[in-house]
Length: 221
Image (tube, rainbow, N blue to C red; front, side, top):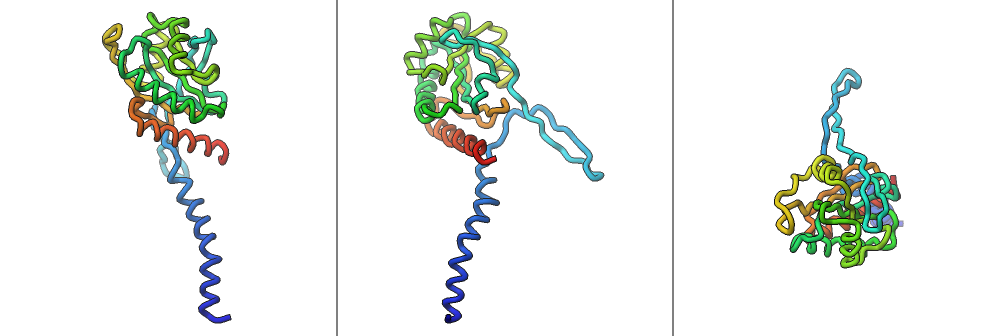
């Protein structure tokens, strides 16, 4: 075999090895999702040196009622894998319908994947009764057991929004109520792995992609 042929054969055999090493060392890390909402930084001494480790917030316990009357907890929402959290109210005239229309896309993309759920928390529980939410959910074709519209006592709803997801408290009242349209991706450990502008199509596209990334990490730990 000529030297040129030997070199060519060697290069052909080397390419798959280099591609594998690239994907293993770079590709996986490149698509790792960040974790949001840091709680504190702990310092530990290892081998005589101090190391800092960020401890991230875990969404705390809550129990609210869905549009079907079913009691839902934080653990139940994430028990299958993950959930997408958002905040709305039924008389919201503009932003909420735009956001929920984007969330319909998320529901349809993962319609047949039981690991993905959606949780929409009302910020106006005085108005949004279970019956009101049942009618509201129908407008968006919410699939039973997939997309939960949640209500409950005002104190719990406010705690979930402001303390657990660390959103600013809503202001105003009635249809003029002002609140955040931020959407969150919550993993199976109750940690926030993504934040998105719920009315923005491109940002919701990113949400869909990052759900797929998170599911992939579950399948390939």
